[in-house]
Length: 499
Image 1: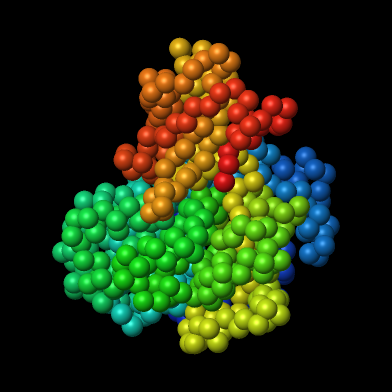
Image 2: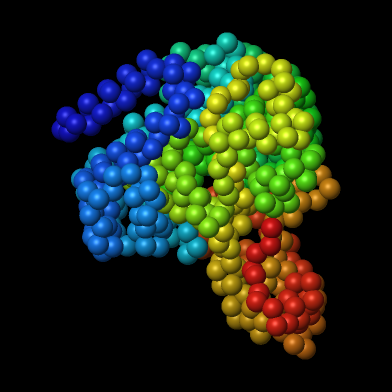
């Protein structure tokens, strides 16, 4: 028996149940965050064998790290230089994997899973992000709520994590009941239609394109979404405000700032931040004012915009990359997750918007959903992955499909991988393939290439196989001649993905 585990559980649960949300999300969290992050660093340096060895290889004495300036000089931690170098037990506190009670998985470019251990107390810390959404956006402290978890279940991070966090909110006294049909559309329809009427609202939690597919298929089946006061929680992909409006209108949403919210989360560290009514209000305004958005974010494309608690996850930005530090089953210090973006303090955000004559506090017209927390914006991974129904798809997976017998004689090996949307904003996986010189396009070749790539994606990428509904798995292939000026210009360094 591990007495320390029992004590950790009791202390974490008591703190979670006894602490009101307002007490957790204080304005002065930002000023407390620096000392808390330094304390986390020294704790990790003292208790995590892998990090001790990592610092050793860099000739760093932890005792010399006494200020934020010192901390900011620490080397970045990455999957390549840290997580793949040390064994799973050495990445955990005291080198004990048994200090964690659950292991989830996410798959990488080879399809081989990366495992992420965590403990009950880690989930309670992340639950605050869910509580913030259910309280501030959905008023779930006063409304009987059915939470329908539509993320993939099993070893994957999203489904069980979300289910657990929703149950923990209910244990705090919220009138929330949880059911987890996973990504089984037929079961989701049955659950909503048979149980939804007993509640004042129904919350669908899942990947954005899957939730849209559920909504659209439900309409075709005669599901009267408007009867259930539908709310939605998304994670895994960036989406536009036009997309939010389209899906919201189809479930008869009445207030886009309060009827949905997105989580910024990763397998590596749980949920890092979440959309709030305030951040959504700001993002919707920016979507209609591209000149302001470009001035604020430095790019014309609109990133995900969320607020975060710096006491929970401490962000820094270096060379346009987001680094974060946070406690978890595998504690991470200055971890580069390969997301590009930036951070904006609360007062700075309101001041910037004020220069353009926009006051989001007045636009919201109510106090709930306004927390004086900093903002983080995320453009997405800086490497060459794309996200499709929450699954990371890598060029390496497609390459294998093009290297199969016969097919490899038809193509150069170059391709462009992207997610496209039709006029109804349904997503599809598009792959533009460059034909070898002298090879002519045909339907036979197109179908053979699609089947080969699909079979390799299903074989190599377990996230693709489990997250993406079968109806959306078949890639849409376009064949071009060698040197096509739009996709494969000669003499230009090739990029295998396009946003």
